[in-house]
Length: 572
Image (cartoon, rainbow, N blue to C red; front, side, top):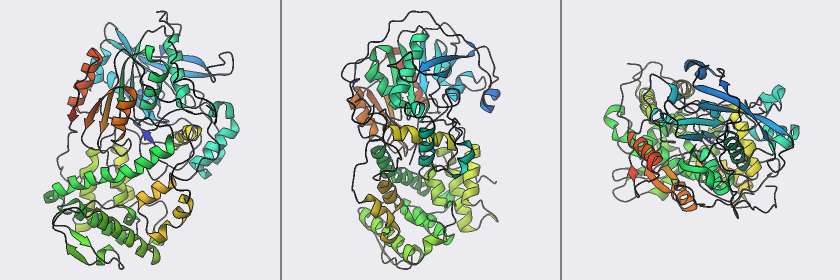
């Protein structure tokens, strides 16, 4: 099952393999099955600001190498621990100690920004390091001039009642099995890990700090916390940024993941188009379909499984595949001169998969090995690595490098060079727990399980299989809650929503639905990037900073993502 985060970090002591559909984020909250959601009927009136901070603050210890690299402990990064009820309706019951981190305003404080980086399962304590990086001029520096920056570590992660479910069995457990093990070990804590409770935890901290209205920045899954905050405590919010929204839905995770699967090929096609536009550099084809075929044939030759990826639409000048009984490399073809060949190329992919399955080609896959196409697919949202991927594939095809990196080596090099950590196995377990706590029964065909079991023989593409997986019941325990319906309760200013058209983690379709559900203003962004503010897009940064100041956003903005220029080969 995919995830949705911006910055991830370890939290649980249960390690599991991450899923092949790597994304970044996820949504909403869930009361016991059958319970009647009431929160949306009448939002809670926020407790008036007392102006009295009841927390005890001290310089935060360095809890990660990234903290150490930013000079912690330091006087302007403070920590406190807040005992928070597992059940907010029972304030005298069991509590969990939750770590709060506050970066103090550089000048006179006029407000406070709370934030969550997504996941679910990302370590919130790593958010906004750019605001204390002396070597980096960041838009967060502008905001920090007169705002404190606060994060509330999500319950269940390290520093907030860290789950320790089965450390001795970590290597043998799948994500869903680990989630079930955690539920069996501590059902009271694990069943309380929901989006609604995370919102109530933030509100508990706001009140303990004696604050009035706050600004909230939610990235990826953090947007679910934001939408729920507006639903439950609208009087507590001054401004709200929802960056790469997971969208509002009453069926949550199954439908969300299914839309992710459907959207992924659009992001991948965008990258194939970029490589085709730079054919003079990479020599992989001058149309997306030609690039697809070169990588597809390379992976088949290497015994990988990239044949299952859906091809992009054909363009004038492309050749439409004919009989594929011998696989793509030996297929007959006819020139295509006009229009789109979506149906034809999709059908060809399925025929090719069926032929490969019947010949035993899929049995040649090395367990756990990646194809080059899998690497490209996984990093479609990271334009900074597109050139390295294209150069490596070009060197492999054209023999311009004696020993080019294998897909696994290429993936390792990319991950090491990325500024944002990938999801850890621990955060994957947390994601699965929150997922299963909030997941309504799957929608779609009741035959999904049977169809999934026969997917090799029918020639399913990877997208077909992902969509079928999200129509099967995979959680090993029933949901613990039912998320309140998202309501556009009036705040001091409507939310600002940032959404990319082809983001593979949070599909572009969720931008308009989020704007409709929250009454917010949508800013559309071209491209595949996931999470936009404070990532180098200067036009986006200017819109956000101005919104924070005025509470207003021009209608109809449609901004570009900076497109990378081809770079020299990484080994030159």
